[in-house]
Image (cartoon, rainbow, N blue to C red):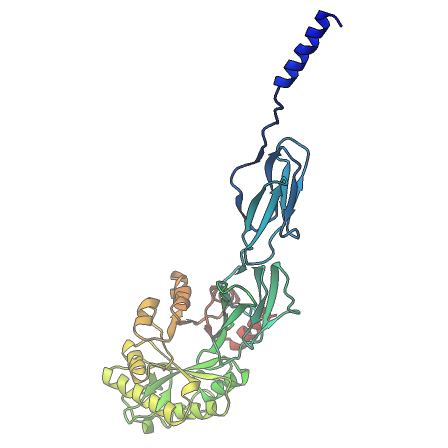
Length: 441
């Protein structure tokens, strides 16, 4: 071995002995740095970028809904798939990422789904013979439906999530009712406490009813304000038959439209003075007692008693007292309505008993005034209600009834039925009854 060779070997050995082994720096990073997530109830994916000098292991403590997967890409290589939470309660899962030396934990808090129960209407009003309505209910919770006995669900109740359309039918409104009210209740089943029951108010208004004006007359044998015309109206089984009454000076309440009959002033005469008076069909002048006797024999048709304005307040008060005595003593309070052009008469009827069904005829008081004075309703001429077409709906909103008189043409029938009046007083009760039957088909 020569000098140069020996020197080279020594140099190599020296260099080798002076060199240190350098290990790479360890690293384990997760981005984003925040490892706690708050997520909504719906499904979705969350991504992290994980880097490590060692092999990685991943796991989830709830792999049924929180599923981590690791790919070989440089960024967003950790995907956490989160399925939708179908429960109302929130839930939490922890994803663990480990490189064998240390571990990092990613916590996922997922909200529960929001309970939902809603209905598209809170009030339903049915009128003009309507007997069916529909409600759209949207929910993700089960519920029961409670109904008044006169409302039925059409078809079978079967809950399903999402939007559901229900159709309800109503039984016929009894003739004696102008309207009735009820509540449909949708009650949650096994739902969170914050979910409240829903109520839908249902009002069924009676179809427009017929009142015969001065009885059912217009033929020779059935004159106005006669027992014959009253009985003919009763036989129609309509809502009511109107009649006009006066009081004699000896306290007998008799029927007649005008203040005089056969030249005799009724309120200034005794009943004996009227005994020879005959109507066109030969009847004597009828008494209110005779009419009440006819009405007591049936339950379908009411008497609508119009007490005529008398010459003096004293006579009006006498008439009010006598009429009320007859009605009460005969036990027909629930078969009688009262009307008058005289505010004094109406006020006397109301003062006697606020439950007396009293309607005003003159047409000069707005519905709010009538309500304030305790009236049951308004009973105005067709011309008044045509000039004040909004009064009927205002009256209804105040809880008053609305009658219109005296309506005798098909065009006017249709007009006021559409307006929504409760009653139509007519000289043609059979014709109107037949027309109303076609509306209800």
